[in-house]
Image 1: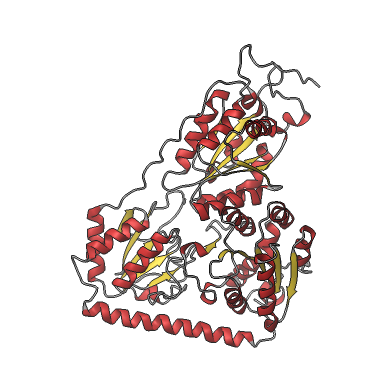
Image 2: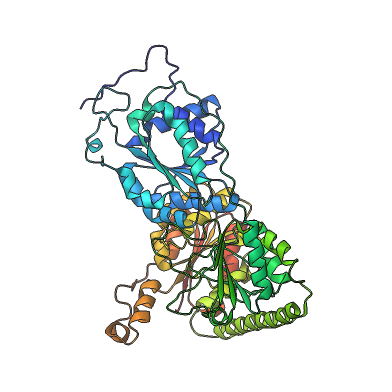
Length: 574
């Protein structure tokens, strides 16, 4: 095996492209370097070690033993801080393992700087050249091609002295509106080569789009003349400023809000204009719909707006240009961030109608009663289900709400029922991305705990999504980096989405009649509560509704007082 290489040029500082890369990451104020490593990492490992020895700024290096939690950690940390993080994976095989969760980040507008090694370009004669069998079979013609539809930008580094420029360009685009992940490949011999360049300060990201005044004035007129306006929100509440803006507009002008597949809290659960999470029949009664950051504002096959209902879309990319086919009606589409758009809209509405107008008051009373009736119905459901023989997700959701601290943040991968787990703060709840790639929830919760160690963090997952999260890796991370989180598994011993889709299409078919769990069943169900014990955590299994409150109370104590991770494996009937 030929391991020869060309030494650093005469008079060189000994600085490599990898040193410049780490310098550039620090200049971008990146906090963490999540690494799922391989043989291509050697120059980066050396650069991080040099930075540590010399006391130079560098992101905190963290070993992550699987790519799924690596991306999810970065995703969760961003949701809590608004700062993008860096992840590095091993060449094409590591990249392949990231695609599922990178697509989640792409659809969720989460910026991540994804770095990947690449087989050395040279076959001999250079620092970092090919010196192992794997360097030939792992090379691809277009490594970036496999992930190109899941990122905003991809590039392969070509020179060592280009490392800082490539990082700066990637971050500039990742943070541009709408935000999203970017991908940079690093051939080992390129980042091992010498350079004398230094990283420059970051370039400012483009300012997000501001709402067009004429469009806002037109929308104000439409709302003022509407009798039954409706706000439909999905991903609008990414900041407290956005939640406050929605609450102010809906409260002042009595516009009810329905959260449709909500990935965030768009309106506090206690707000009197909150009409829950089910569009029907509200969407069919509305004469104006204001869709806020809604990629799918309704499902045409299930319920559609009335033919004379006017439709307005507001968002950073209201057309969702990366969706190949999307045919929702639109009478007006405004490109803007939600808080700015709604602040301008509320101001413009004052020229048309007063919040004290009689028709606004009548509507406010009517919607507030509907909202109160909904909450009473949900409470009655909880009381009834608490007395049943098996645990239902609605009762489990209520028990979680009662057990966790007020400042808790929940990362929900499918099963939690928000109707029964009221949330008030913008950063208190995050649902999985609309892309639906399984395995995100537990890793994202760990990322949130890493970024905000004083917050109590909960991961609610199904048994299928818990398996996809690579729980052994996640529980090791929790123990290794002191990241105690509470994981609650809604264990129905099946892939519910597969089963429900089958029953939805073929409710009277053969599978529904004789084998409803075909290609969906997960029995025999593992003792998931024992997996966390291997990493020093607390695990418990629950099967009876009456046992839930005490078990969850104990789990919360373990996480908050003992600073140990906990898994509650709840056998659910749904």
